[in-house]
Length: 389
Image (cartoon, rainbow, N blue to C red):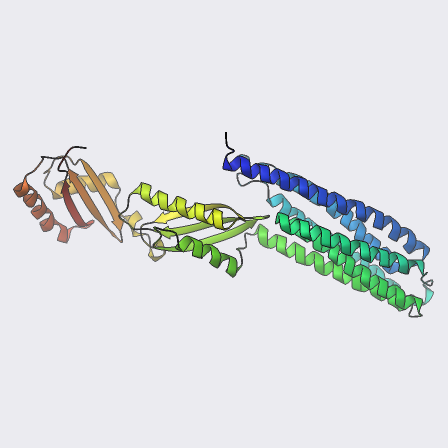
């Protein structure tokens, strides 16, 4: 038996989760090795910038722990408490990552500024710090390129954020190498200045990732280009006359879409549903990042007002219609009501053989006479089936 769409989606999420775990464990292994090396060499060679970079790398290990947890939770199937799935765990982890980065960078800034004020008493930087910084730079740049390629293929903003975290580390290691080089040729302040620059870079990266996570948590919509592409897909669907109130929001690597579509007001409910389902299927097919589409079908543009809700419901209108017709016929075989504008149009279907041509003409005459002053009906069309169904 073929897998259902839900089963296929869960299978893809499971594979995505496993790949995300592998990527993050690679990052953990590299960062543990670099942290140990930077701390040992930094203390031996008296390089504050290398120690600052080690603390930055240590924050990466903690960040990877958040990523592993969030990746595991985000891969869980939807349940009663989380009907849209657990993708927001990734977003929450991105926010924690941002705050962690900003806090780490702030601490480095404070420590480096203190050393810069007392630069005369600082011991000289050893040449081993330079070799350690260059090795760290190469390792972090390689890690960035590996993680970014994998994260973009998985379309995971959390993993992309973690990859750019590694790139920020590589850039900070470049600054550290420059600072150490300056200190080795006699500019003692260069190492502390490099530490300050690294701290500022970390704070900036943290604020950037934190802000992006906050934007997703408060349901910020997609970019104008992405929204226009989805709008074009909906508007070009057969049966859609116009559309409005297109709303989008992200949930981790996926997108949720709501839209109102206007259809011919005289088609059946089932045909209107068919149009809505066509819209949904086309958006899902042409925009793979979209998880689900909620389509509201309108008979008219409800942005101009919703006068239909002020009109009576069906039972009241049918009783009033019988009064207009003077109880002739006493019962209708079927009646279709169209709520359009602030009035109602009725289509009355009589059983076959109920009335001859003259009687039908008399019924229509009564309707035409009663409608001009009626508060609810703008039109009543009388129909008679010519054969039984």
